[in-house]
Length: 373
Image 1 (cartoon, rainbow, N blue to C red):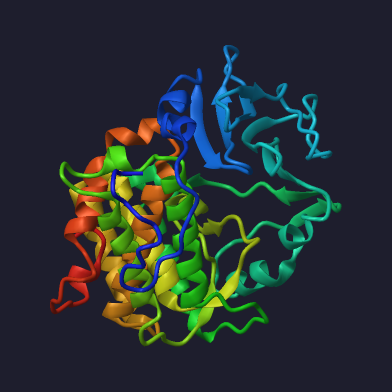
Image 2 (image 1 turned 180 degrees about the vertical axis):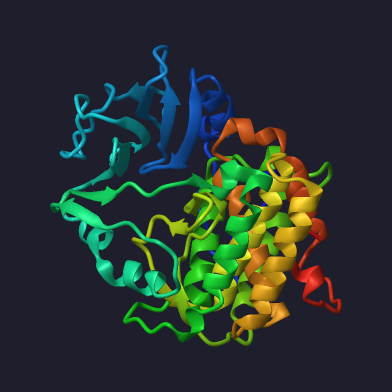
C-alpha cells in the first residue's frame, strides 16, 4: 500500500483492517502482465489470483497465479473441481474460471459447469419466472445435475456487442423492466448492507494485491480512494427505499437482442433489492461502453433518456440512483484492476470517480443522475 497508509485508521463510515501488501504482492501487476495471452483475472484464495488466458492455439485456458508468483495452467477443457467439464465436449468454451465454473456454448444449448452441489441455483425457475413475467425471454432448463445445468441457447447478440445497432433492444428492455414493480417473487433481500459488503470486499482484494496505487492521480494516496468507498457505503445505508425483483448483475452483456425480443442471461442470483441496484449498475456499464467506444454520442443520449424514463417509473429516487451508480462505478475499478489491459483506461476512470465524489453536496436532477453526464 501507499507509504503511510493505514487500513485501521477508520475513515468516515468505519473501515476494516485488511492484510498488508507483501513485497511479492506489490509486484502482482507486473506478474500478471507477464502471463501470455491473459484475458481476465480474479482474486483467489490464499493470496492467489485465478487467471483466464488464450494459449498458442487460441484455446481458452484457466489457471492460477500463486502468491509466490508461480503460474499454473490447467489442460484445455479440464478442471478437477468441475466434473461436468470435458475437453471433448462439443461447442466453444467461452468462460473458465479456475475451480469455480465454466461455460460452453453448443449448437443449440449452453452448458454451465460448476462444483458439486452448486448447480441448484442455476436451475432454479424462480428468477426466470419472475423476469419472464415482464415479457423478457429467459432460457429453458434442458438438463441438470448437482454440478451442471444445460440451458436453451437464446437468440441474438448482446447489447454490448451491438452498440448503436441495439438501440431498439434497449427500448424493449426498459419497457419490460418498468413492469418489475408489479412482479411478485419469493426471493432473498439484497439490501444496502449487503451491497456495502460487496464493495468493501472488492476494495480489500484489489488493495491487498497492491493493484490500486498505479491507478491513482499523482499526489493522491490510497486512503483517499478508501475514503470514497466508505462514504459510498455510508450513503447506501441512508434512506433505503422499497425493494422489487432484481437481477443483481445487470449490464449490457447480460441482455441479448435479435431484432424482435430481448433475452436476459445469468439468472442465478435474483434477489429483492432497491430498483437503483440494477439501474445504477446498468448506468455505470453504459458509461463503460462509451469509454470503450462501443456506443456513439447519439446512442448514449438515446439510452440515457430511456434509463431516465425507466427510473421515473420505478419506486426509487435520484439520490438512491446516484449512490448505487457510484458504488457500481467504484466496484468496476476494483474488478478490472486485476486485468492489466484495463490499466490503459482505469486511471481516467478513477479520477472521474474521485471528482464525482459523494461528499460533494449538490442538487441532483434525473438527467444529471445518469452515468453518461
